[in-house]
Amino acid sequence: MTQSISWLQDEIADRMLQKLDIVKLDVKDILIAPDFPGKHLGALSKRFPKAQIISVVDEDVSDFQLWRAKALSNLRSLFGSSISPFASYASSGKFDILDNSVDLIFSNLLLQDLADPKHFLQESWRVLRKGGLIVFSYLGPDTGKELRLQSIKGLKLKNLLSPWDMHDMGDALLAERFSDPVMDMEYLSLEYERSDLLLADARAMKLFDITPLGAIENDVLPQKLTLELIYGHAWVIGKHLAKSKDKVAYVDVKQIGRKARSDSA
Image (cartoon, rainbow, N blue to C red; front, side, top):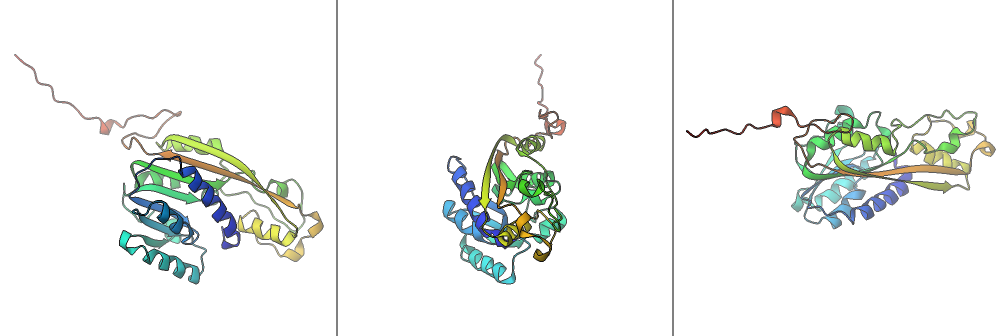
């Protein structure tokens, strides 16, 4: 996702923060993944002023935006915040932080760009402490459905990398040992007066391959674009639990201790 739809990133982040208002959480360390770039750092710094923040910057940011994000991070040097490029996670599939090191993961509009979000959930489980929380949003499979309902010459559509709907994600959270997942969904309808603006947003959301605007006739384009926004959060409670099967979590036999027995004569 590129910066051309920064307004959407800001809007959804605000909605995620509003949903956090009802959550009681003692936060010492936060992971923001991704941070578009450094925008969410300021909002979460105000919400949790004593927390250390790791802000994982989106790989598509410009040099200036990366510099700005680092400058904002330096303002919080007393609290130990840091900036790291998202490209390192994209290439390795791992966050460069220790196990059990954060209390909150804040992930805005990322999962739809991952072919298999379960790896992100596994990494999140690894770095979250017991009692930690993952909060996320992503675009659901109905996003851009108007473009798929009609054949548009010169426009090669493609599906989002992750086709997971709200129920798929809820099941995946349970399978990866998260507890009490809460999922929510809403449709956001965007209306356009100019076709080039619709195409710019659709391209930023990776709904089609890059196509020259001149190859598309404006009169065949829809004037509206629907976004399916999916929100979710889940807790890390039993880090000793093995992965679940059929929505039932099982205790890893290695975690079962043996109590010594003393026989009296």
